[in-house]
Every structure is written in structure tokens, then in C-alpha cells.
Amino acid sequence: MSRIGIPIIFTLMFGLFSCNKVAPSGFWVGFQKELLKENISDQGPYGGHLAMHWKSKKEKAFSSKEIIDFATRNGWELVDTLEVRSEDLKTWDYNKIPIFPLSHTGFSSTPINDSMHEKFPRWINTGLKVYMFKTGWTTVDPGTGESNQVNGFVVLENSGSEMSVYHLWGE
Image (cartoon, rainbow, N blue to C red; front, side, top):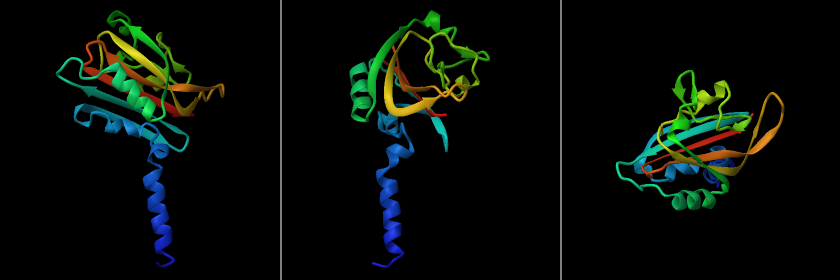
């Protein structure tokens, strides 16, 4: 093999086996692909964010067990859950647009006015459950330097016909 061939093969192997580290939540693309409707992802040298949405015409298309098992197999650790009523979702907006209230300070069920919220559109407007995960990645609040490791969230609509994933990492 030529001297040029070895670096090319090494580079290809590195790219192939490091996908999860290059795209921290990239594994979610493989979850029920045919029902994935939205995939917003942006990564830079200091961090990134992801917002994804799945929708089915059938109830119970998504189950909490299936979601938790999939997340766990891919290195996410469930730490908490929260039930949210549709009435409470009315406060989850930014500039009158429905959002998932996630920022570098973490998730808050009572959103603060933070422009980071616009990166996380909310597609589900009925009662839902939020599953909170440690992802192996860290979020750092640029203003304080405080870090947060609970930065991956799966939102499941109560009938099981819709789900969303939100992840924020870096600074």
C-alpha cells in the first residue's frame, strides 16, 4: 500500500467510527426513520443543538419504554420525568412562537426570556411527558461558566402519536 493510501484509509476509518462524537445526538436519526418529520441540527467548534420531531397518524406509535431503551442503548441516562398539561404549555413561547424551554442554563418548565429558546421549536401542543437525560455531553452557561450534564430531552405526547428530541451541548 502506498504512503498516500494509509492516511486516506485512517481518515475514512476515523470518520466512520466517530460519528456519535461528531454528531452527539446523531443516533436519533435511526429511530423510526419513516415517521421523522423535522430534523434541525447545528454544530460548531464550541457546541451545538438539535431539535427533531416524529409524528404518526396512529396512537401509541411511540412508547416510553421503546424511547428509554433506545436512548439508553446509545449512551443516554434517564434522570427524571415531568408531566406537562396542555394549559401549562401556553407559557412555553418565545416571541409568541411555541418553544421547548431549553437554554445553556438548562431546561425550565417556567421559561425565561432567552434567545436560545428559538432554536428549539415545540411541535406538540397537547399534554405531554418530558424525559430528561444525561447525554455524556456538557452544556456550559457562557455567562457564569456553570455546567450542566442533563441536556438531552425526549418529549412524548400523551397519546403516543408524536415525539420530539431536544439536545444542547457546549458553550
